[in-house]
Image 1 (spheres, rainbow, N blue to C red):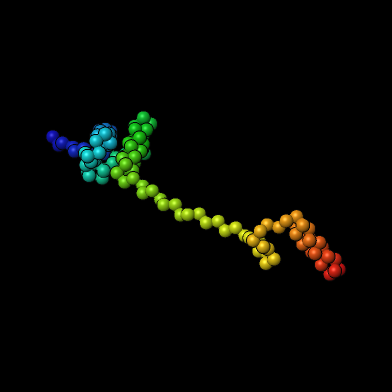
Image 2: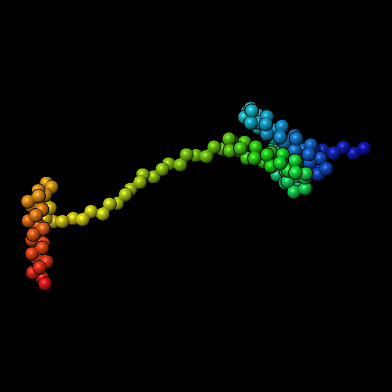
Amino acid sequence: MATTELLTDPGHAREDMRLMEAAVKRSVKNPEIPIPPAIIEAMPKVAGTILLKGEPREQLRAGALLLAFLEYNKSLNPPQPQQQQPTVVNVGVNVDNRTESKPLTAVQFAERFREAKLLGNAKQ
């Protein structure tokens, strides 16, 4: 009588999946206990087989197993926070060489307006 090993016989895909689910749940609860390398290596093959050929209920479990494994991987390697570059905004400034450091008074503004209007009329 030949014995079959888990993770090697395609006829035992459901049992393999249960083993993998238990390994992922155990490692999520206690991160000090890693998932064995043999299970990590066989997981895509077993879950993929069930996703393609299994019954709908088994397909859901296989998808959930892969998502749980993805979350486990993310917890092992958290993404590094990205440093945001400072935002530089260039604002166009109209420079008039006749401006003083003080704001224009109403009288100064009126004089400049009248000068501009007279110059504009002189060119016509």
